[in-house]
Image (tube, rainbow, N blue to C red; front, side):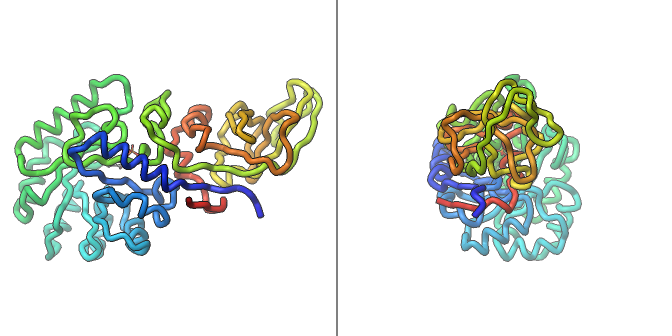
Length: 354
Ligand SMILES: *Cc1c(COP(=O)(O)O)cnc(C)c1O
């Protein structure tokens, strides 16, 4: 059997949830599990997130999978419903909609039943979803025709909370408070991972950790370990072939890499069709038998080539990221973010949940 495997640690996931919740002891915790729990197999890890107060996903299909896996927890729909006819399903299944547009607001007001809780999205500077300060009061007044403040959570999202420069986020918090002060009985939710770690004043009633739950630091140059977080996904495989090459011999598609000296190349069974993305460059670290080597040459669909030494043999274990090799290092080399690496692992690797 092909050895490429996506291995998920429920123990580390539960650990991360507990670390994040204890950073905000007076807040409830919404475990953000959109995109299949950032690639970490939501239907198989629900129980490890049992201590969360809610789940949050991007759409009803994701929420339905959680129900089918047997969880009864309330589920926040982060972008609300996409069509009016999703509201009855959301209501029946205890999914809680975000209201971010006048269209969604009208659908909600036309819907005969009352949700136990709805989430009012304010755009404080992200420039994406949500009511802007100039028309948010108008939207809130309409909502208050049907719902009481006690049933409404005002939420916003930061655009720059991972930056060392705090100005933009502090301005967003001020804009949030200026609006929310008109509705003192509404609960509040502002912070995703970077907000949770960098802005304790923005913890408020509900925190919304995503990437940090999976053991990844949201800050450039930091690692999950710096926040006592542990990696949840390990992408691993094995060595398929070991061969000796002479100085200047080419390796892989396009002959983009040439041996700098005589040396040894291990071919490993992982490629871009598994989610080890093609733009991961020569020089990216990889672990074989716990020792660090470098990927060289182009990533192929099913294989990569690694510059190794005489210690490496066919069948040896290869770790692309995860346990003992922080995914942040791979993301940094590939000029992307760990969010993308986690969420683009495909269905092909075997899954190992422990
Ligand atoms: C995805 C998302 C989160 C989680 O963000 P992380 O940076 O992964 O912690 C929180 N809130 C909203 C609205 C989101 O869309």
